[in-house]
Image (tube, rainbow, N blue to C red):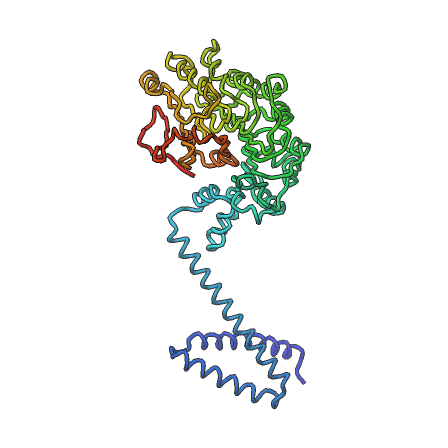
Length: 479
């Protein structure tokens, strides 16, 4: 009878023999000589049929087990081959990729989140770089609106952690007259920002929300209260009460440099009295350099107040205002208080009057409003003449303005009614997002005129565009 010691030794010997036997079989398979696929397939078929014939004297269950085990082994071999292939590809990419990991992560941090996910699926090296927190510092889900729900937003923000700096969500543009793009995201996703004593909110520098509704104002107020370091805020297509929003921004967001709001529903007329929260915000925001209010019903007195209330405000955009007639342009030229505004944008302002634009031109020629460098009064609807008619060829002294103030760029593009053309004219920086916001739902509100009035335009008339300070040969951009 064998002693316990001998039994243990025999067992160890069997276990050590099995791996060696497996290695020998696998090595023999991998060293299989090169043959035609047909020959190899025939060999496999022949050996498998022999094994099935000798399996437990034709027992069906034993044959099924043999086939299942064969499929399992073949699957393991295939998976092992794929792993080896990926390792080789990753090693090759690490050698051939011309950027070190830290610069690759820097590049990934500039991508929108959808593109980042695609890059992460390319190879192991890219996946490792894409998993770095810095790659999620700037989260941009504007290209994945139909797939990004609140859970996705939470995951992205948690991946960014302490590196979280900016968030862009929603779809930038929307079709004429349309509602917000169907999305799985609503305003509740913002509730993560104030959590953990504002851990994420305090790190946020830029927040841009496009056509996301509904957003509860109390929730948004709570969120903005935790974003004390916010410098850039853009909310487009929202129905939040904007005057209450300015109170919150005045109290909580003292570092704002750029603010852009686009109204989804045309609010009530806002004058200097009802708009006092807006004036207080502009006056007390000492870092505010850019203010964009699109589709807001502002009075000309309030617009003048905004232009003169801040010593830091350089960019003022009041496009698509249905109430501004341009009187504040005249007052701006005659004002004793010099404005700091360098760029003034008033595109597609339906009530903008020719005489007010003329007065501004004359003031510029006389050397007033010295800070202005870029003005845009382009409109698909033309300007309102003295008689109340729509004109598309206003008699503006732009040639003289170009001679006297070569440092000023004056853009005035007015497509003829019968030309069928519409213009997109963007500011000097050419920011694509802002241009899309400005043009959303911008309709041609020109009233139908009598045939006798239409007769003054010939079918072969060319579109008229007025520019100074720019290359006149530059092609207009159509949409």
